[in-house]
Length: 398
Ligand code: HEC
Image 1 (tube, helix red, strand yellow):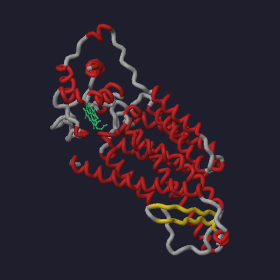
Image 2 (cartoon, rainbow, N blue to C red):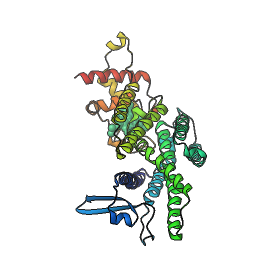
Image 3 (cartoon, helix red, strand yellow):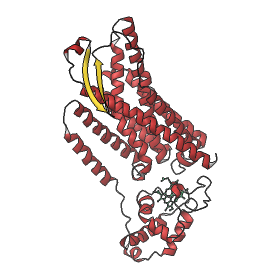
Image 4 (spheres, rainbow, N blue to C red):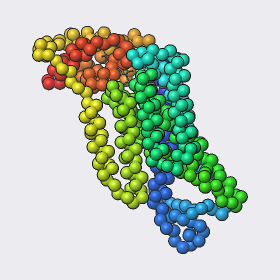
C-alpha cells in the first residue's frame, strides 16, 4: 500500500478507536461510580419501586437519577443500552490491528531474530492466539468456577502468563504486547456480547411478560462485568505500551507485562473499594512501591568497560559514520528502507548537531532499551553500541 495512504488510514482508524474507547470506558466508569453513590430514596420515590436515588449537577443543569430496585412497571419506549461503545471499540481496534500488524506484518509483527515467519504464518498465528485466548476464557467463565471468583482469577492470571510468554516467543516484542491487548480487548467486548447483553435482554423480556428473570443470567453478567472492571487499566497500559520500549523490549518482557497487569488491576481495586466507602490506601502505596521495584528491576545495566576501552576516544566522525550506516536508511530526508519511506516521527539525523540534539533520546532507544535500530534491521553490532554509549556519555557531561 502507498505509505502516505497507509498513514492516513492509520490516523483515521486510530482516532476512531481512541474516541470509541473513551466512550466505552467513560460510560463504564460512570455507571460503576453511579451504582456506588446511590442513596436511599425519599418515601414517594420508594413507593414507586425506586431503590437508589442520586442528584448531580453538570454542564449547567440538574440531573435526577433513579435506579429501580427490580424494574419499572412498564418498559419505556426509549431505553438506552450502551452497547455500541463496546462493539465499535472492538471493530476499530481490530481494523487497526489488521492494518498495522497483519498488512504490515513484515514490519511490525515478524521479528526474524525471534521467529522466521512468513506473513501468512504470522497472521494465522496472530488470529489463532486471539481465538485460543478468548476460547479458553469463554470455556472457563461458563463452568462452575464462575461462582469462585478468586480461584477463577488466579487461573486466568496463569493462563495470561502462559499466553504472554508464548506470544513473546513467536512475535516481535511490540506485536506480542499488542496481541495480549487484542486478546483482553476481545474478551471484554465478548463479555458485553455474550454475558451482559443477554442478561439485559432477559430482564426486559421478564418485565414485559410480568415474570421474574432467571437469576443465572444475573450471575453471568455480574462475573463478566467484574472481569471487565479489572481489565480496564491493564488494557489501557498495553495500548500505550508501544511508546515505552523499556517495558516491551526487556529480555523478560512477558513477566514485565504481567507485573504491570497486576499492579494496574490492584489500582482499580482501590477505586472499586473506595466507591463502597472502604478506604484502603495501602493498596495504592503497595502499587506505587511495586512500580518503583519494577522500574529498578528492569533498569538498563551500564556496559562494563575495561580501562583501556574507557580511554579510547570516540570521535564525532566515527559516530556520524555509525549513524549514517545504521540509522539513516530510515532516519534521513530520503530513506532507502523499503517500508519506512518517510523518516519515522520526522526524525532525520542530517548532521552531528542533530545527533547531539537528540542524544538523550538516542541513548534511551539505542543504549538502554536497545529497540533502535528498528528490530536491528541494519545489523548494528554491540561494539558500535559500546562506542556510541561512550560518546553519548561524553556529550552528556558537556
Ligand atoms: C528500519 C528503520 C529504522 C532504523 C534503521 C532506525 N530507526 Fe529509529 N525509528 C524507526 C521507527 C519506525 C520509529 C518510530 C516508532 C517508534 O518510536 O518506535 C523510530 C523512532 C526513533 C526514535 C524516537 C523518536 C522520538 O520521537 O522520540 C529515536 C530516538 C530513533 N528512532 C533513533 C534511531 C537511531 C539512533 C538509529 C540508528 C542507531 C535508528 N533509530 C535506526 C525506524 C528506524
